[in-house]
Structures are given as C-alpha cells and as structure tokens.
Image 1: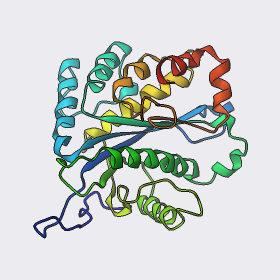
Image 2: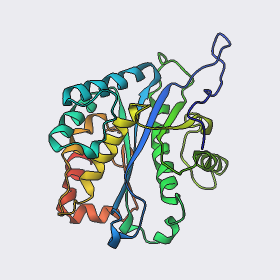
Image 3: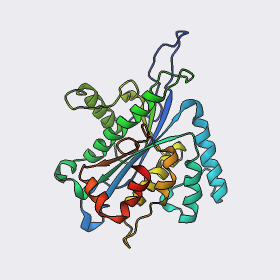
Image 4: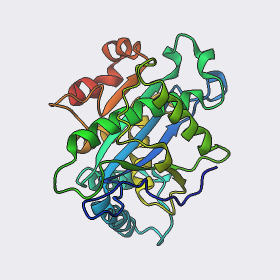
Length: 280
C-alpha cells in the first residue's frame, strides 16, 4: 500500500521553486461491488469525489468541526453519514451544499450490466468507476483553474482507505490508462491527475473524506431501495448547488450513470423522478 505521506509532484514556479497541486480531491464510496444480489449485494455502487482548492482546504476541516458541534457529536470522532439519523443528515447536507466545493458522483447499477462476469475480478468495478470519476474531476479542475490560483493545476487525490486494497495497484492502473489514453479513449486530463499524487487516508485523518462519504451516501440513498423498498432522494436534491455541471448540464458531468441501460430505468420508475426534475 502506498504511504499516506507523499511529496508533491515537482514543477518549477516563477522563482525556481516547487509548485504544489492547486486542487484537493477527496474520494469515498457507498454500496458494494458484489453481484450476489440474493445474498445482500446492493443493486447500486456509488463512487463520489469532492473537489476544493488547496488554499481553501482548511475550510473543510472547519466545516466538519462545525457540523459535529451542531449535532452534539464527540470531538474528533469521524462522522459516518450512514450512521446518522435522518434529522441529523439534513443539516449535514445543508452545510455541505453551501460550501466552496464541487462534487462528482458515478452511480453504477450493477443489475443492468450485461456482462457482469467482466467486473467480478478483484477491484475491476471499483477501478472502472474510478476512471469515470477522475475523468470528470480532471475536466472540472482543468476548466476552473484561474490566474489567481496557487499551484500547477494538478490535484492531490485522497482516497478513503479501503482495508486490504493496494493503492500501488491503483496507481499502476492509472499509469496503464495514461499509456493507453488514445487506444482506450481515456478522457482524463493527465496534467491534473498524476499517479504519484494519489494517497489513501482514514476519514479521521482527512476530514474532507467525511464530506465525500456524505455525498456518496446521499446519492446511494437516492437510488438504492431500503429493505422496505423506499429510496430517499432529498439529500441528492439538496446537494445540487455543489454538483459539477457544464453549461447547466449535470448528467454526464457531475452525475454519471453506468451502464447506458440505466437510462431505461429513469424513464420507467417513479423513484427516479428526482433525476429528471433536478439534474436534467
């Protein structure tokens, strides 16, 4: 597993020093990657990122601290969105939706995948979702760096640490994508996403991961039915102010569905009305 400390990728600034990344990206997930639906695998797997600027990153710590204080939660104990009651999730999401962040989510409907055996290899679905996610994160960072921003335009990418997962393998996967960009139609901007700027931390060490968890869980609850058959889309609707869009288009940018067949579900099932009403 890669170290949770790393040197920023070097790049000379005007004074001949080293320029740090401009952005910080926090990534977390909700749901699972399994396909054994009769034994409890979730229908959906969601991978989400929240993006902020390094210059504003301290505000993410203050945001989480403020939410914890307002909810009466113990100091330094990580907030896990899934463990909160609905009445506590609402103020959490409300504060996140006002923050200087952008969010990107990839929502995978596993039962719609035509060849699921392709994604039953270890981490295959996770890596594939990462590719979609990092493509969109890189577009946002590339298009939104301003002359006032400090840094080289790249992103410090921080994953929520998954027990047993090798992040060296993830970095190697990103290197393969970079080397096969044209052949595989990879749309990641590699000036933004650099494999040696990928790390993994627990949510207790990087508070931005607690926000990424809230975003991923919010979108998961909006599509994946509870054991009683109900979804909760209010959180996803509330997050719209921070969801990445391009010229008012959210689908395909800040909200990416996979596979393509998910579009058939959206038009046929009333529980997905929030997508049409809020994100089309």
